[in-house]
Length: 110
Image (cartoon, rainbow, N blue to C red; front, top):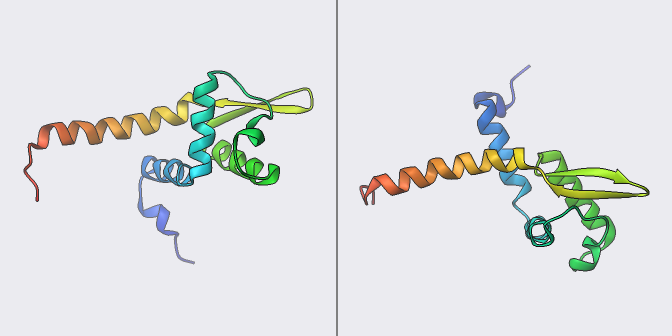
């Protein structure tokens, strides 16, 4: 039985790919932007913020949570969501690596 292509890459590379894929939809970007704007956990008002049906919003929240970009806690009958700093630290480290490269390259490439 063959190995999957993801096994050819490091654990960090695979984790970053999952995070990037989770960010690859405008609705998920909008959810993250809203969480940043309200600067607190939110419980259910996301459907009013997005032009999407409740099941669709729930699916996007599930994808973000599975990727580790948001956390969800039960409060009564609702789930309250907030950003997960650990997931964004991985993205931040990768962006820092890119920024360092770009600052030091001084137009050495085409």
